[in-house]
Amino acid sequence: MDKLTPRERSDNMRRIRSKGMKPELDVRRLVHGLGYRYRLHVRSLPGKPDLVFRLRRKVILVHGCFWHQHPNRRCKIVRRPKSNKTYWTRKLKNNAARDLKHLAALRKDGWRVLVIWECQTANLATLAERITTFLGSAKTSKSGASHYQVSSRRRATGRGLSDVRRVR
Image 1 (cartoon, helix red, strand yellow):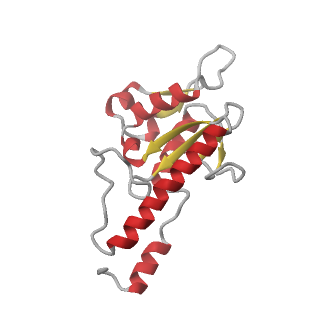
Image 2 (cartoon, rainbow, N blue to C red; image 1 turned 135 degrees about the vertical axis):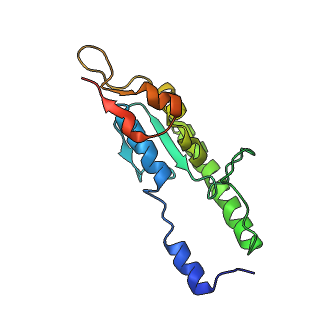
């Protein structure tokens, strides 16, 4: 039995969006700050990936741990709802199956895919390293140095987007 009335549940579900959520915005700010440029939600690709790097033939998907059912057992965000179990079990299994279908289609079309889970956005320094490894070098200046860097303080703490800054 659902704890909310149908009207309250409807209002709650209506507020949940598929684009522009905090984990995606954090990743977008980080990627942009590292000097990479991308397209958002390209409709012509399977699953409308969150960030698309056409020339590199690479995409980044930012998945919410709950909605996409993060398989890592140590993830504290993923959980199973206690009410309306049959509905949620079917819904979340369908989401995960659709994700696998989109991943397979992207890879079949020659795209390399990086999936970033919501819980992985907590440590931005580690995430920056993963993204840089996945994408390769960013656009460089005439001197050959990257336009952006992550400060050593941020690397140590893994927090704060304000520490990504332009290097002159």
